[in-house]
Image 1 (cartoon, each protein chain N blue to C red):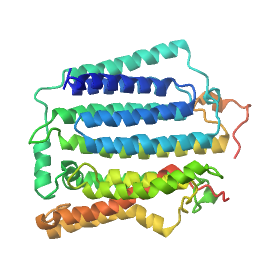
Image 2 (image 1 turned 60 degrees about the vertical axis):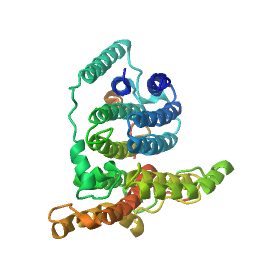
Image 3 (image 1 turned 120 degrees about the vertical axis):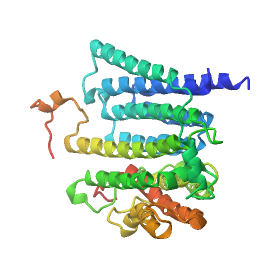
Image 4 (image 1 turned 90 degrees about the vertical axis):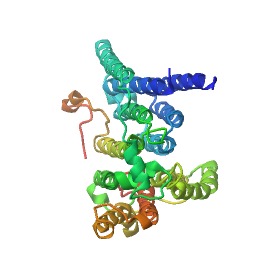
Length: 113
Length: 316
């Protein structure tokens, strides 16, 4: 098996693992981590497309690679925004749950500002 | 020759194992540490895919800065127990999510195994970009980022600024204009102060070097800027310096410098070379280095601003 096929299969596995964690973890920061796993899996799949597109004297296709670099930075920016929202949620309500039922319950330390 | 396939398989197993750990770990901190190690190993895979530029970015931004962001967030949340976030998922939910994840991963793997042959490629256009309007650039990635897809790269810097604005806006109204909360604890460990004092100057020099060689070798404004940002954050964690007030004029100018200079150079393109974001052949390399220098500055300022978070209004 050539290295790029292996890397592509790892990418597919990462997407699956990330999706599983994103659905099941109740904690928003853990969801964010899982989402980043999905992201790096997608980047890896993109990377093997770049590797297979070797032409014109390059051993890779530079355009998908440049897009992955852009993607990594944008993914970080989105993660930072998500972290800021989670922290504000916690600062406002003292809770970090995303469970809609927990928010509609009247008792149990209702939100105060 | 004979060892490399085994190394590849071992690396793949380690990465998938660490990803499982990131998902399965009980404690947030352990999960984040697993994620950082995972990002560093992933950088090695990028090297194997002949993508050293991506490897540098993944190691610096995807693994390092994201790790700092999540560890800082975990500390600020305090010891929020897993149970507080909501009820643990039931067995049916686990089975369903597992089946869905398997389906998606399986479909993706199948697509990878039946990718078209020969593969489509834009490499000739990239070669033209490295040789044409962005003349004299030995690193085709930099040529693509600054010349072939220059508009995307400029807009990506705008995305970074928008993200910083978003993070700042999440803060409380009365804290607007103040500095974000300090990154480190009140009395930092001697070891972390020593590390910052020793590492930050060296790291800053390496960051500028990576930027400077980026025109011809792996590296560039992204990777160099991320390294400079990391050094600033190490200094902030050791409390050698504090996050700046968000209404500081110098901070804001540094944030917008990269895209602004890029946009001005792009708008000057029609006058100098006949089209938007085109650079005259003879001066392309100095112009690109000039633009990248300001992008380096913007990235080095934006990443720590994103990690430091919204203004807190608290002062010590």
